[in-house]
Length: 426
Image 1 (cartoon, rainbow, N blue to C red):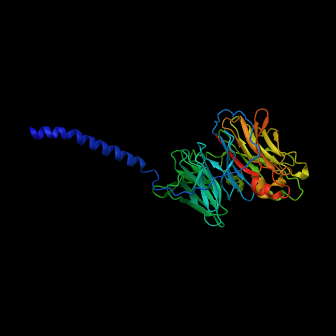
Image 2: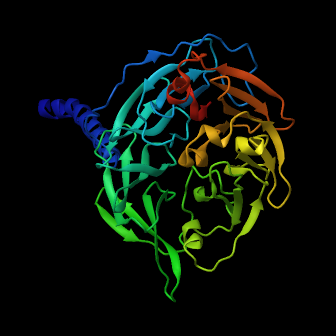
């Protein structure tokens, strides 16, 4: 009887231990697919960027909070990464410099931004003002495309090398080294996307079953290091960052820009093309699929199309000073219909190099698509001005001006202060 009573007293303890083991085991199993390890990051020293003028009080657009911020790239040479908080009067803060490309890609939550600097792929934690390395760029490499995973935990990206292109997948917290997914010759386009279950995909160009070119998706499983070729028509392939694709996914816009048509003193015209839902590089490689011209403005270089939920498209345009320069600014319209100039800009093609002209006049749309924030470069005044424009009527107000530079240092503005790219975080 005594042993029986002791055994009965022990039973609850055994049950408690078994329950603990089950809980711990379940937790370990649930973490088996999560990255482990210790993040080794890079924390640049923030420095304040002085500004002689604080923005006046303004009401934040709907869907945006008082923690909103602009993450900007300033200076065509120094390429400084700065953060300017819209919700208070604090000056912009410099986080990093020497950015390699103008690719700034916010995560789905709007709290982190992917960029590249030096020989690294970086993720900036905006609220913490902290950046860390998530991947290394091979020597001579440049980040040319990227997509955040739908849950914002990982990033798939493409690096351009001298003789090839390579796709990678990385963890946003740098808890594991980036993994290589696929290599292809330089002349073979590569893109990245995600499956609905969170597995990364590399899209490349291949030969179809009856000849001709088609998009081929290659799925990568980072847990087993396996690569599986998926059916060409697999859907959906998720690309959260694709502003040129229509809301229903059936059409896409692309700039038809040839930088060779920009002779000194010339007046180039750059159009916006319209194509179906197929992978665009296949069509551009000469598959015979026709495309239409969605927008064209005489003597204006159109680019950076963003499709809105309303069905309208926001487009930036730049003109040469030799052609009057009045065509520079933001345009709004529906494909196949005339564009209307929403806001006029002082900047001209002369403020940018041939490569910079493709991505010049940066802008970002608010979450509720009621406003657009954009940066104008006034070479005569030697300063950049950040504006906020209402999309329904074009009403515009000034948010920020860069410091005035001395007349005896005309290159200081372009080299260090000019806003060459920006993203708007909620």
